[in-house]
Image (tube, rainbow, N blue to C red; front, side, top):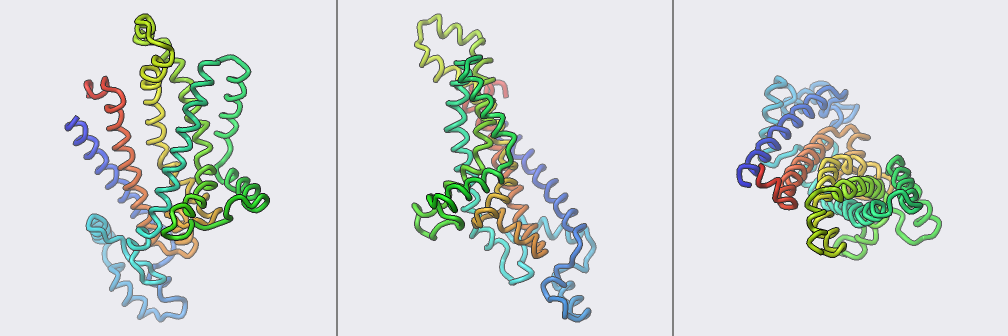
Length: 314
């Protein structure tokens, strides 16, 4: 297990470095000069050049890249060119909202998707199976932002059951959870369909395994066979898709946070792009890359905890 952890850590580190280099190159290619944005249109060319020199933008690209990576690993994500605030501080203030949104979305996907998939598998080729299959495919093919707009119009603006926007009062957990419900369902409902379809296929496959037949031959009840044997093997693909899909969730969080005017990493990136505040975009994307790499590393490691056969064959 220790060697597996080391391998996954090194692979994650290489992935993060590669992604950061690619991100740096893309930001360099984007039009707009941070010094000009910070000083405004009336700034003199001399003043702009002085600020560029102070920010290190007049140095060769490879020097800027080395400084960029070095600063990241010491926790310095740069400075907001519009308000001169620390990008790290800005991200720390909004990151808990995005983590809460992503976690709640995954929770909804698993809690609803797993039982729906199991029911669909055990009642395969029945009316219930066809209804669940149609519903799963329908929600999978519907973009998250459409669910967000629909939930906002129906449950907030029409019925008034939930707040229209915001992340809730700071320090008030119940209010924050209240503001989290609609965005979490809007972001997570598509994943309910993914999980349900995947669980259905996995359960049907596991039911034909030899060890399931052996468990039944030993006289174990169907409930025990399903909960302790079938689901344990069937859940592995779900762990995989949720780990890989975490990046998709972060991408979807941008639109969901904008629709609900919810503070978070996605809303921060949107506003930074809109105002050409590229240091904030760069810093927020770096944090998103780190989050994605960490989640994928823990996803890989969780395989061995769920299925000891994988740990033994590492």
